[in-house]
Image 1: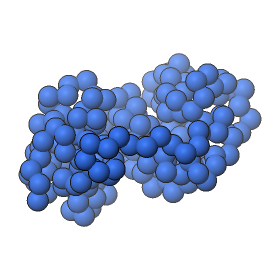
Image 2 (image 1 turned 30 degrees about the horizontal axis):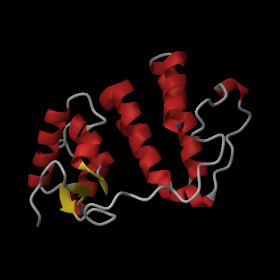
Image 3 (image 1 turned 60 degrees about the vertical axis):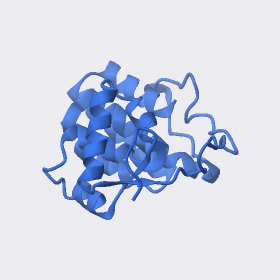
Image 4 (image 1 turned 135 degrees about the vertical axis):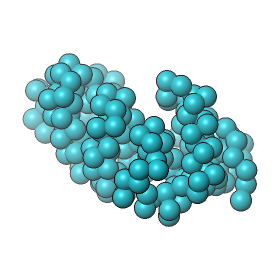
Length: 183
């Protein structure tokens, strides 16, 4: 098995996926958030760059690798090869730079099947935003998002998460979460 470094690409092992699903107490809330983002598509550097304390997050990732919850994998596009740009842009209504206010949206625009490859990244981004806003109480919501198989399902769960953020935090924070999840 390759050795862990900040440039390593990480993904959950079967043990790690089971531990997340069972909410294993051996995994801290920060470790859980990091494991959710470890899909084999981003390097450890890319993952920790999104977090407030990159050094601590890198150490947690290393601990998760040593514990067998994560594994080092080959880069998805080959070493040194930049990831390709999406073949088609996301449809308007999902990811536009200035989405309409939630109250003005009658229904989310359906998402093209070609955008399905970006679903995992959207789920990871929304999970990170939820964790940042709600802390460990976001675990159930993140798990619900992880189960989404289509953008339509993801969009419906995203609206559910927005409602929870509005109840727990505020309407303003809920709008921030929803808009940032779609950008």
